[in-house]
Structure formats: C-alpha cells, structure tokens
Image 1 (cartoon, one colour):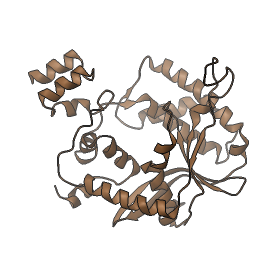
Image 2 (image 1 turned 120 degrees about the vertical axis):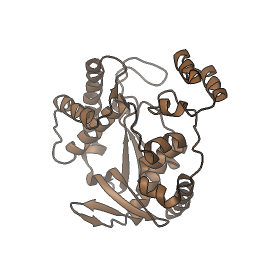
Image 3 (image 1 turned 90 degrees about the vertical axis):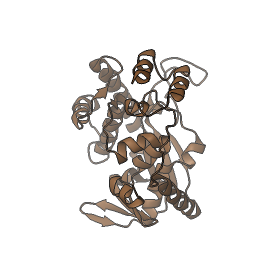
Image 4 (image 1 turned 180 degrees about the vertical axis):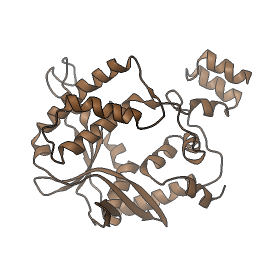
Length: 304
C-alpha cells in the first residue's frame, strides 16, 4: 500500500494522530483496516456528555439542569455507535456515580468568575488546515476571550489522570488546534472563515479539579475543591512553525507501508484480540510475565 492509498483510507485528525503515537498497531487495525473496536470505555461516554453540557451552558442554557440532562445525553452517546460500552460494574450504578460527579463539577464550574465573565468566540467548532500539502481536520472544544482581553484556547479534560506542564507544551492536539486557529479555517454556520488568531494561552481545563475532597490528605483539606483546573502554556509563531515540521514527520511515518509495531499497552486496548493473534510466542510469554495476558488468553493463542 503506497502513501496515497493510506491517505485515502485515513483522516488526518488529532484523534488519528494520537492513535498512531499511542500504538501504531492499533492505528493499523482501526484506521487502515477499518476494524471496529470490541468495546468503548465508559469514561468516553462521560466525556462526551460533559463536553455537550459545556457547549449547552455557553450557548444560552447557563441554568441547565445537569442531573436531568445527564441521563438523556448518556443514553444518546451510548447508542450513537453499535460498539458496546464496557461498564466496570452495573451500568445503572456506574451512571449514578458519573451523574453525581457531573452535577458537582458543573455546579462548581458555573460558580467561577473566570467562567462567568468570558466571551465564547467558538465552541465545539470544526476546523481544517493544510500542512505539507495534506488537510488536517478536527473540532475545537472552546476559544474564549477572558475578562483581561486575552484569548484562550481551551481543551476540556474529564479523566482522573494528572497531566504535567511538560506534556501540555508538547501535546499534539493543542498544537494542532493552535496552528489551525492561526493558519487554518473554522466552520461557522455553513461558511469556512479564517480567524487568524495567535492565542495567548493554550490550556487544558481539568474538570475533575472541581470535585470536592471527601477527606483531608496531604494534597488538601476536606471540603475544598481538588485544585485549580486550568493548566496553561503559550504558543509563539516559532512554536507553531516547529510543530508544522514535527507533524509533517509524523505523517511520513504514518503513511509508510511497513510493520506497525505494538507498544505493549494492551491491558485495556479494544483491539487486543486482533493484535495478539499476530504476536510471536516469545512476545506473548513476555507479556504474560508482565501480567498483560491471563492464562486462558495465553493458552488460546499458543494453541492456535
């Protein structure tokens, strides 16, 4: 398969690029072969619901009833694809816990002056930008003008994972968003417009930091929010130019017809069954020693 044939099969989106960087083998199954995953993680449903509610409250529904809206949105996103959702325990119990988190997080989000006193320039807006002769597409979470006049690109995060400043500064997704705002086009209504914006801040907004601590620990006192939710970086023109060269190199790697290696991140991968059928026995045994495979899986693969 040559470069053009691969480009015709995949979309150059932030999610596609992240899939490749996370695990080229998973990228191969999902984007080149078009194999559907065996499951979707329950956290994905929660993330979709939270993003949609943020869009709603900033487009005229500031007093949105989060508790009642949650169930309707969760059902919608669960049934939006024919790939089953993996629930860690009873579905209703998991949704109940997520619903409580959503109410707490959204109430505290709306309580902050830095969210009340902003002008939302773009929310859940599609973009396209050409880099190295290829079109890249995606959807921006939010671009806001703060009360001090600064322009901030915001990417909302709902996972528990604590992200560090170094990862923020090198994040492919935020770099692509920032590049698109400066050099690309946004779909506003039914027209593509060129915003030509060099943002003052590119930001991860950790919504879980709006949760209340249930007990006192070394990280904080009971009754306090878990932390300040905004983690910011700045993007200069030189940063965007460096990103342009970086992403061109990544695309070259993505579009070579070569062996797509497995990065051994298999524990919760929804392509594990497809992937393991191609892994040599010595690699399987190594994975077993690390606890990636259980006995039943190991026996089934080695027997085949």
